[in-house]
Image (tube, rainbow, N blue to C red; front, side, top):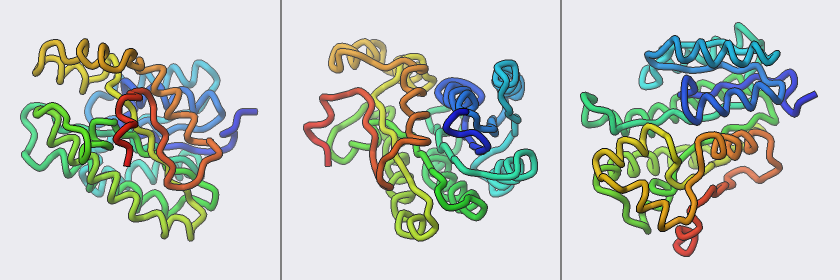
Length: 249
């Protein structure tokens, strides 16, 4: 029996990368998982197939989190397919893509996170857990400078974290806890690739500064742990990037 047996989890942005790995780990702990994608259905379906092949339960749901319809589709899918919603992993983020509106980063990294939380907690029982995934570059943005190309994303993700933390008193009354996972730059993610493309050598430079960068699988394991970790609400779990901690606020 896994720690999440008879529980249901939504993992946003889980058709690839960190989200996909988190979804598979949670499924391995017994959770039924709603795998979220925005456009790439085949990738999400592959994640579901891998979970099912390992004996788990999952469903892929296409949903644009910047719309209320998309947010509600995820919550409805959890309830209709599995009958509950006990873990919400807010992993989806963006803003460095080409061809998106100027305010897209804020809409996704702040507004969509708040809307997703509001819709989810309406059906989440006492004892549920919300996990918000962010980066050191965003979490420490007020005290540690970041690359110009990432600045709008960093600021929008910090705004998202701050907005979610404002819900802690309300969540506490409902018996729901919120945990933040902040990680250093992660090898192999889309964001790291785009940053390195815009600033050739950025990944190697950060690797030299930090001494080690976590892989997608390593970081996903740390995120998944926080779904059941015995920590207080509002806790921030720091992963890698020890040089940031001298400026921890």
